[in-house]
Length: 442
Image (cartoon, rainbow, N blue to C red; front, side):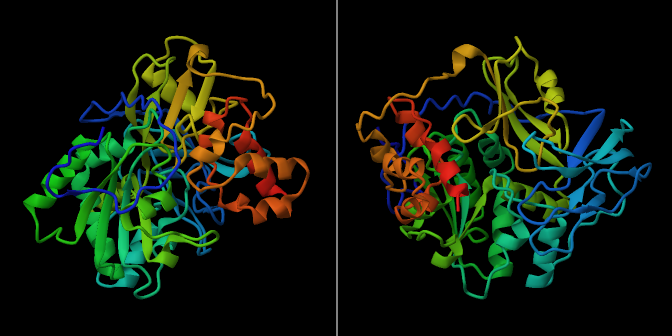
């Protein structure tokens, strides 16, 4: 049934084909103020972003405070890292934080229990485009929707290259409600960050894209726009239907502007830049306070969790501490970092929370399904639901035959790995796993 929209809320310009309807399980967005985790120790990896790994700017036994720079890089594609708690540097070691075979340096900080802010933090003073981009970098902000791409790099644009800024508030994965929370309770930071980006980068138009299962957030933002119509005259809200994976960047652009991002191209190639609403909220907070990205809002949910909720978590906190804070009914059979469609299963609860993490799901056996793969029955359901109009079974068949170039010619690299094909497949073929494997082949 179509959602009746308030005056000032717009329908999509275009509606993409494909996608699947999921049980949203959005049950953790009830609290106006987030509970805060206060860990005794944090373990902060130095590669929490796409690009060059940072190098420590502190040494063992140094005293640090919240927001103090502890690692940085001279590389353009990188993002500085700050202390998330106050205390003492206990160790700087090399470790494999996710048991993937890829190692990084990790800074261990032991808390002094005070959470003392760094005294040299100041509210940014911005007088030019260059000042703005420098401050965005100093904030340590990366894409908080999961990608981890440094925001200062994303916003480094040519003059008149982009004419639309899109705030992505779709949050289409089940369980996760962090973006919804930020839109309802941190809306002024989101809107002020949008205005700052539009002002300093010369972007004339702003759009906030929200799914129709978050109408409370949409109407709160609309009320704010209507209270100050001149201030926010160039920002509008578009309501999209809640069909997964509506929050994918290319789909958000298509639904809100009608523009198509070709394979191998970026949003800026069609005049758009897209930022997650939580990323915008953090940028707005930094511009208002000078406190860089040190905490992450995390949805903790799943059938094994006693008290599902959103939690304000110092970056580097152990997942085991976070789950203990939320409480467990029983030992979980599966713990995922991220949502159930695109998240990853964890092999250890001693992994730290990263900048780009947005959910930890602890599930009992009755909440998920492990199925054995059987032969494809050629039902074409995977083709029907693919939002990128690919033929997943044909791609997988080529990959199994090691015909990688053929698969690439047929659109393999266009696949967003959303998992819609996996979800709908009656033969339980792990299509996305095959597609990911194919992308890694040369």
